[in-house]
Length: 335
Ligand code: ADE
Ligand code: ZN
Image (cartoon, rainbow, N blue to C red; front, top):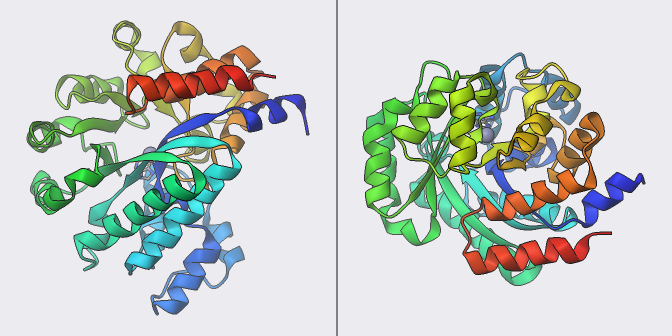
């Protein structure tokens, strides 16, 4: 094992950008498709893996929604989440903030309570059994209309103790943050924090809207911010974190190669950058793999990796005391 791989493996980390539906491995997809008698457009695990060649975000989303259709029962959501949490344990991820997309499931006739209860149950077990802390973020699908997001927020009302924030994901271009101004305002009034995918494929204008209109605490992806100097200054001055997903960005052709990724440039400009896996079952790896591959491609220093790990805790929605506790653990882990 290379020295940098060893360094990354023992570094305590938080993950802030992971779609739980994106952690559905082909093996579990097949198992659930058989159990629940749901047809999927693949004949074998190899067939699934061969289909994972994406030209852009939409290409990926089409396969991702088809895959998610095998999730039917609370136990299915529990098993999906538990599998991801075991990966966290292996990767020394001490805290995770998980996205899930209720509309992906309610639109297939799955009751709102099924997904959230299954996911929440696994997260509580992870705290007790693996010592992993977590928060859950409910995302609205931006290709649907705002009325549907309002309906989803209403369905969440009996579950507010399980959700820390609302987010915005799915097809970015043509669906600007401003489309969801009113539902995000309602969510904030209900005491929820806000985040949004912006500047993955979409222009920096979408990042401005996420900040000004949705009043987000952090930006998911945000890599296109580098095209707008005034926006960079704002992100730096207001210390707005970016949850960056290196392997995802290459798989979806946001960058041609990891060596061309702007992660290190962003970090060295003073942006609060974090490393994340996005949809690990589809993009080639969980959190450590993202750290290892971006560190190798950009020659990240140990110091830059430590900053990234501390940023991941400091950008999370835990208390200042918990942030300090985890950052102290980062310091004492350094070899
Ligand atoms: N849903 C799952 N992964 C996503 C991504 N990378 N961008 C937007 N929506 C998503
Ligand atoms: Zn994402």
